[in-house]
Image (tube, rainbow, N blue to C red; front, side, top):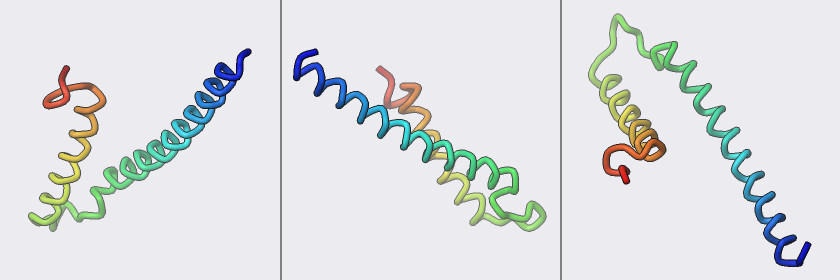
Length: 78
């Protein structure tokens, strides 16, 4: 293995470690959001008002943007 190949292999290993660390963080956030969603994000369905609806609309738009980026939809389409 040449020095260049060894550096490339170390770089790939470091990239993978960083990716897996961020994926674990991402998965933990998804689990938290899933649990919060099951609990209506703390909103009482009997007394929910426009503030809760607006917050959920904003959060949904952010998640949709992330999904669109990943799946290359909308403005991210190739």
